[in-house]
Length: 147
Image (cartoon, rainbow, N blue to C red; front, top):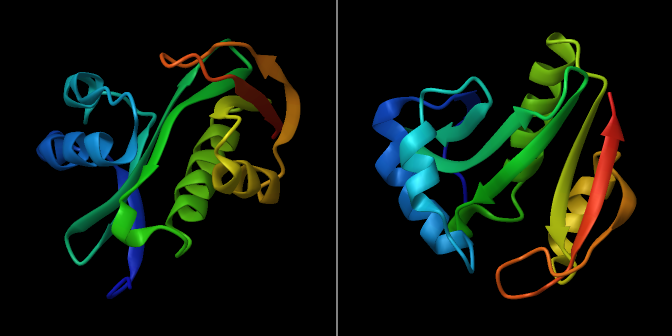
């Protein structure tokens, strides 16, 4: 259970080690080197924090002048299904709208029904399938949202 108020803020370099640990705990094919490399140095990296503990992150980047792409969303296993992912995604959507982006897209594992539901609840719609997208050969659904 989350103690205290949860806030969303930009990632900072001191967050990197904790976020790399989270990356390892959350994904089948983690990329902690990516987290360590970009933490605090890109505008599109938000974290959710409560009582000085990091609960999750969202990493996003422009893919064109009008569209952005979600690179990664992770919520610590201890804090899943408590609204942290929703807060992070809403924070990201606010940032993108403020910067004038028109749409945002993402890929999600075909087997990850919880994430698909989260994205659908936020207004993302299915836009296609990317065959063999993940390292283990699993397909990804492409989802998009107009801002």
